[in-house]
View 1 (tube, rainbow, N blue to C red):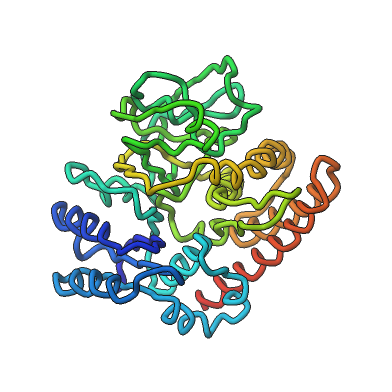
View 2 (cartoon, helix red, strand yellow):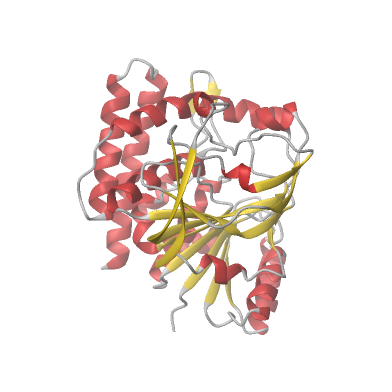
Length: 375
């Protein structure tokens, strides 16, 4: 029987974190409701990874490790897609999303291999709100942007913004209104204790930890934005056409961009959701982010081009009009309009235009593959 939800993550580490998720699912009686798909890469330790997953299978969990060899076999039926999925890249989580779709699930949880579920919190239960109507405080701001890091207590206490929050929207005197109403939640992002998801500029500038979720579960109003990442995020599979993890590691203006594939994916899917009248929620389940080791100067070098262009992409997205009730049509239209707008806007460089053409092609292949899987 197909599972209602699949949790998907990529890793080059031995996926022992899967044991933490399985313990949580077992504790809250979700063992038969959820499966786990682990996507490896060329740097992965396959034998050890298969061993971890096999031991969890013996405990009765639906978990499967996909080495590169196993992924290539699965992708043999989707040759165009296989050619555009790079190795040694978190873009490979797209393969995991499609495998989950092929298994027939209702929702997918995307996580990173350093975001640990808190054992006292029902991880799947909180993410289970996607695809349902919920009565929540719906947040609206005069800047059209909401800082979800304000929902977290910091040590030392200070103002921080999540990775991907446009710099031209920061440090404004923003008025916030909330109105409780019943809305259709189709995507949910859990926040993070310990290491918040902030950009390298902030990390290099200050040391900050998050210690407590001090807010309530909220939803963002239509037309109100906040960065959406892929660290602890669930979405209804209806949205998968709009949830393509953007291609990174491309050269833009003498910089190789990286680390914003999920952020630009999040901008894309939020625009599509707004057009359909769907809502995104933020808050629980809180995860313990024990961040993998990073070279912050390398992170800065890879993020800088994305940080610069995020401000411009947000401006473009605000001007785009979408009209359809179909996620595939909306995703195709948005991709085409992004290509058109950015090619005509002189603020975007020749390198960026080349990148957008490549991205537009990849998104077309993504949509074709999804339609083929669903036949």
